[in-house]
Amino acid sequence: MPELSIASFLQLVVGLGLLNVWMVRAGSSTDYRGGESTTLREEFKAYGLPDFVFYAVGALKIGSALVLVAGLWVSVPVKPAAGIIALLMVGALAMHVKVGDPPMRSLPAAAMLLMTAGIVLLP
Image 1 (tube, one colour):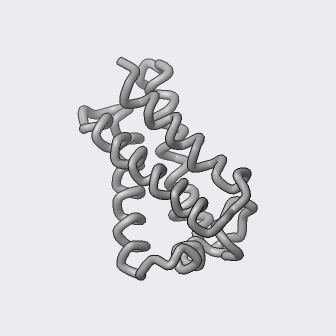
Image 2: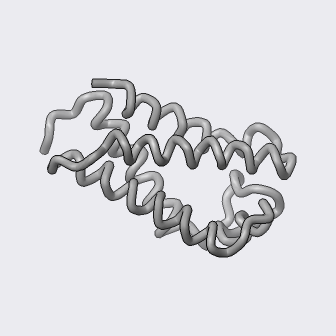
């Protein structure tokens, strides 16, 4: 197991968290889905986004999550992957505002944004 620094701990939390959301819980209802949606796909529709955005965002998040987790063992571009996720989280926060969600629904995106900023900024 690699040395567990704060940055590597954040990599693990963000990477596994995104894989959980996109590969395990995509069809599940949560208290944090935007609008009145019950699935991840419905959430993108609630935001008024076309289908291709769902697939593009999913590919970017899953790919970046895999880089973060793999980066614990092999040399891969972890900081750019975290930067991509951070930008996507800014977009997620904007979408929650767009549909008038209460601030509580934005907490996971805000937490992911802070953690990815930590990955990018920490040595």
